Structure formats: structure tokens, C-alpha cells
Length: 188
Image (cartoon, rainbow, N blue to C red):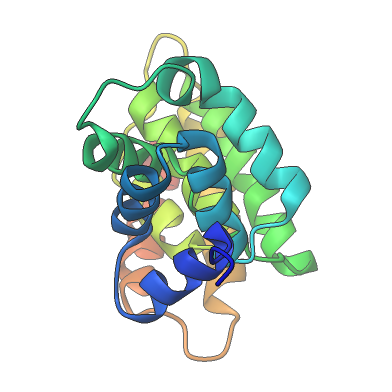
């Protein structure tokens, strides 16, 4: 009987409720091939091959080139935290406009922390724009390097676009109101 391809094993593990990190660990332990195991999980998640290759090239040297024994579970968790297994969402024109506004707000912030930037990039990839918006509205622009007026007015526009969708998240209304107040204060 021929061996089952890694992608088929990854699909099976995911269908049975394994997280991508758990599926990776299972495949890596079984095959002792970290890169093909990570690729198989990405492909099982329907991440396009070109995107899979780009993502894995970015972390190959640090995580997959020379794995230590008995670290497959830890490596899977790190790959998941890095967003390697994030399923990209196709953004429509409104979503792309919102992301453009977020990028303008990030620029006006004057210094978003690296971890926050990483989270935002993941939310843009997965189309989780509400979470990205709420995250940005909870942050204060830096007074020395940022442009508070532009930051808050940009987030007001982004919030209005997000609220113009069918069944918007109720948290958006409060966040938008807060942005409007901050915009008014910053303009004084």
C-alpha cells in the first residue's frame, strides 16, 4: 500500500478537529520532514502554493532548516503564531478601502509597536477588519511623532465604512463614537 501524501494527512487531521499547529506537529513527527509538513498543512488549508512558499521561505532558516528533536509541537505553535497558517480572505473594494484607511492611520499614529503591527497584518490577511479597527481605536497616537487629528479622522472614516455593512458588529458604534470625540478634541 503506497504512503498517504502529507497533504491528505493534514486534511484528515484538520477535519478531525486538530488545530493547524497540532496537524503540523503530527506530520512533522511522523515524516521527520518539517518543511514538507508545514507546506502540507498550508495546502490543506487552501492557502495558495505561491503564498505558502513565500511564507515558509520567510521562516525556513529559523524554524524548519535544522529542527531539534521533540520540538514539533513547539514549532507548530510558533508557525501558527507567526501567521503561517492564516487563511487569506479575498477583500472586496470596500475592505481594501478600509485597509488603506488603516494604513493611513498607522502612519499618523507615529509609532505602532511591532507586536501590534504583526497582529494588524494578520487581521488584514484574514479579513478580520473589525478586530483591527477596535485594536486601532484602543491605541493613542504618539503626541511627538504622530498626527492625532489625522489619526482620529481617518479612523472615523474607516468606522463609517465598516458600519455600512449588513449586520455590523455592535462594538463598532461605540468605537466610532469614541473616534469622533477624539477627533474633535484633537482638532482643538
